[in-house]
Amino acid sequence: MKLCVSLDLPSAEENLALVKQIKDYDVWLKVGFRSFIRDGKAFLESLKAINPNFKIFLDLKLYDIPNTMADAAEEIASFGGLVDMFNVHASAGKRAMKEVMDRIKDVPNKPLVIAVTALTSFDNDEFKAVYNEDIETKATKLAVDTYESGVDGVVCSAFESLDIKKNTSNNFITLCPGIRPFGEEAGDQKRVADIAFSKENLVDFIVVGRPIYKAENPKEVVDNILNNI
Image (cartoon, rainbow, N blue to C red):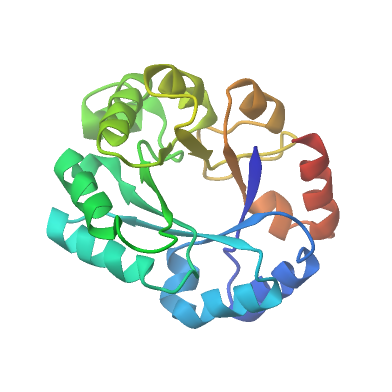
């Protein structure tokens, strides 16, 4: 299981200061909408400059018509090794996901691609109001679509991880946001899990944000997480 640290602070300077504190650890860094829209490709370059061995997950959740998604994926894949993984929405459908994978198949050292099933901010009632199915059922269906489209894995909660692997493959990546490593406050996340539960459910990547960047000593928290995974 790998730790992916969310860089969701209000400025590039604060994010970079956080990364410098944890630069010697074997972790992934998640760059989402806020940071990428504000700081762009140059921010990714700054992260790699701190430690070239950092792996970067660009969390933009591409969701559009198939050709537009494929165009965007091609641009991300052409960033010269800056992005090691990015994501799309599984709800865009199998045709869109297949087109994304086909478009980048010949890119040297192409990034991993994963697809969002159900956002961890949804509870079951909220999710059902949008998708007309329970989370557990629909998340697995979307994961199977993703697997059959040749995508590398999914974004899901730890509660769906094991069932998704049973219906796809143990090698199919599950990346799980909303992780509160030691039972910290959930905040705006609804389907949260700790490290122990994530391990039991064969999660491949845990994404941790606030419990790290809001801590008085982020390095100590990262060290503690890594010692427990």
